Length: 266
Image (cartoon, rainbow, N blue to C red; front, side, top):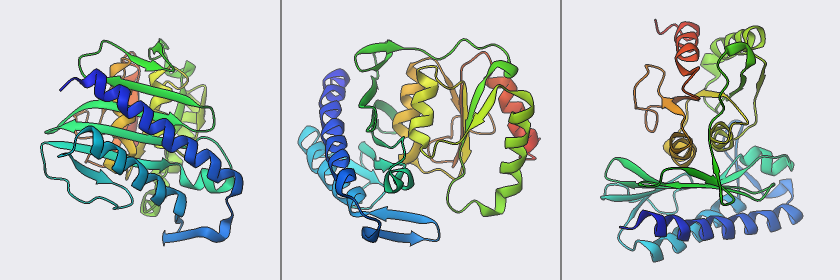
């Protein structure tokens, strides 16, 4: 497999899906929203975008399986797996608030080899492939920040659906970051958070209760841009383990220790 060629083809797919999402945002109305659960919304745009993406990716690798958020393609036990979030940041999209992203990753066996993220509102295309030395934003190489101290770091934190039993931990994190960093943000899209770490806009991102499609492409791009990406134990189970911290390597360890303390993991 030529990962660069695959990545280039996926970039086209992501942009086409993003263009569809942008057009639908112009005519979207709240009465077309569905509720998967309490505070967990989905729209026809998510579903149609996913169908478009799946159909296009089948042309690139016909025998690949899929791990998808909206379940339009359910096979996921083959050697090649596409990991897709057709619209990460659905709540933002519904309310017309940036950012929201198309996220597509490719796994070979258990290894991420391609990551593509298209942030729709700014028209920003982030991508990387296995064997490439860098990650890119609209054709330009990107790197993580060089911030060395927590007090100078801008941190993003997420709060996923189904985490109401961990509200206290979340509030403790916000309070800690408010006191010890340059600021804390909640953008509403884990995919955007990760690629913003990759290009140095953010220095740290952490969240629990995430699925593989929320993080696969963004985490791979962040790694290729120089980030340390781990689970809360400091290991590599961030894709399916439901927790992730991504940061520039100069401050990752400090923030990992803080998170372990705040989440009572030490």
